[in-house]
Length: 172
Ligand SMILES: Cc1cc2nc3c(=O)[nH]c(=O)nc-3n(C[C@H](O)[C@H](O)[C@H](O)COP(=O)(O)O)c2cc1C
Image (cartoon, rainbow, N blue to C red; front, side, top):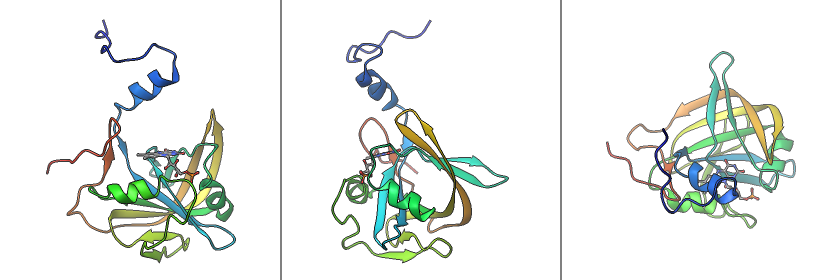
């Protein structure tokens, strides 16, 4: 028998229930970046990032239909996944904002293949991708990226995680 629900859980079927329960599943925190056709940089925090396939090497994530950052990256057809390091709460907040120049004051380098921005500070790894396919799923898209290059920047820092609305600090 499943355990009784915690008293603060809203009724089954409500969107808040979905959000509340799923907030108990920790996620990775990456910033997906790209350069639109007009040369403007775009970047968004993504918690739904996952590796998909080793042969061929595929990764994926789920941008929402209403994202304003995803369309220019889709147009470019290539992007970089920046894996944030623990303690980069400010970077996560910056790239979860809609509108404005989210890259203002952020040092970046162009990824070898895609030219998409790799954050110079605060990441543990980056993955350079070509857009392989995009599938509509409910109010999100499933985006599949073909990995063309990737590297670890440091193994000294833990990667960032998001759990229950916060960025908990992982032990060693
Ligand atoms: C921890 C965290 C995880 C997120 N994961 C996703 C995600 O998987 N898909 C998504 O579309 N938005 C996600 N967001 C929200 C976007 O970062 C944010 O709405 C977006 O980048 C800013 O809006 P814009 O895309 O309209 O510029 C997440 C935000 C946070 C803080």
